[in-house]
Image (tube, rainbow, N blue to C red; front, side, top):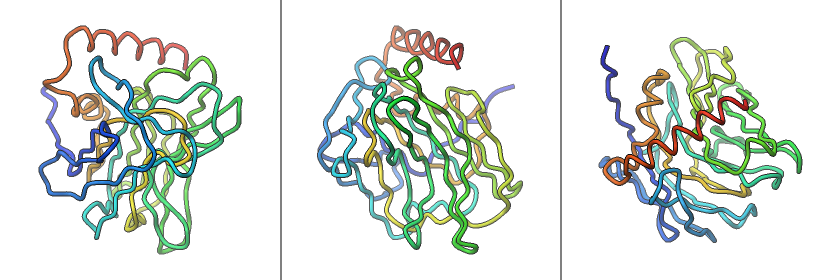
Length: 238
């Protein structure tokens, strides 16, 4: 059977140290960069953004509801964690009320770091964690593709890393707090690329199809083969 091609409503390559540009064609707001550098991306010849692990190195995207996810959503992003460094930060999170946020967070210590999906529900004031993908020395230092998916209709939230389901949790059918700024990379030490936002819960086959959406037309066959090889190694070590 053919996979239905789904398009994100917001698509940020995260590849320019001077501007976080949305290339979805949906007139979403662009982001402002702060103390970041360009680096090699997840596919050969492409670019990502390097964050230095401090609170002054990040991307901020303000919006007036243009990027709000609210109900069902999927957040897809490439991350490259610097080995054995950093205690926590924001991969891609939406600010909500009372200092809470929803999205993908990174935290840990010198030896074990984790990626966790967070869903804040303003109606109850509750924030729920989904997944706990741990970075250790053997699975740091190369690119990982992460997807946080929430299905409002079923009430389940899931965290995938490199096509592997790391957690699925029933959290209920509630509106998620995503009305505030979208923050990328704050206090995260490493590289981030190709942030995609969908207002629907993607299936695994859709996640797989979308992982190179920022780079189509710009990568060669060697890059595809090389990326597939390292993903296979990552899955083996997990």
